[in-house]
Length: 244
Image 1 (cartoon, rainbow, N blue to C red):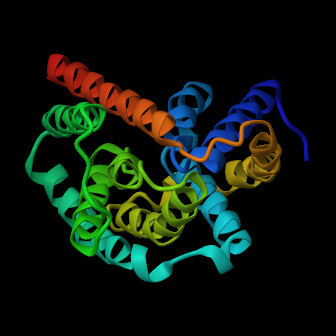
Image 2 (image 1 turned 180 degrees about the vertical axis):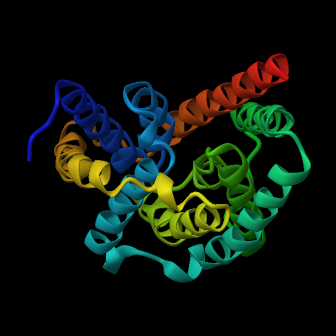
């Protein structure tokens, strides 16, 4: 399989972003999507979603015996109506207005977390977080932080594994919504195949990173990535408002 110089760069970006998500639980889409879009707009959203889903599949298969499916199940179920509502919002409200609203809400959630306000990891909160992740993921393409913030006080591997299980089922829902909205052509199979080695290598590197950085909590990384996500979404909203 031949790679152009830009595709080698894209493969490096995918590998590095996969390392982050495989260690923290979120971050691949946020880190990879903007850079890959600059290389080739065809990377977004289909290939980015599929590559992230493949990582979730690897994590779930590897950690299947340690996964608590029963706990994460309410969030998975709530993702479906959340994604549907996100699609409705996109039709009825300008995308930049949604970005401003959700970006602000996400930034407030991060601030409250820094102030030591936290929510218990129970069925009700998992349902709400799963629903919000569906809404936010479909309307702004940043769906990880709502569920990750709820897991911020959990042990890092537990959080990573259960967030991966959430995305394993949640990502196909997003792809379905993409297809229903006429975006089937946006899933570029050729790019996905070429970037697949980055997923495997990135996961392998993350296993070695765990031996070097054996932190039990991913809370600082989750808060940092969530704050950056909020800022990115806010900037999208501001730029969209100016353009309109």
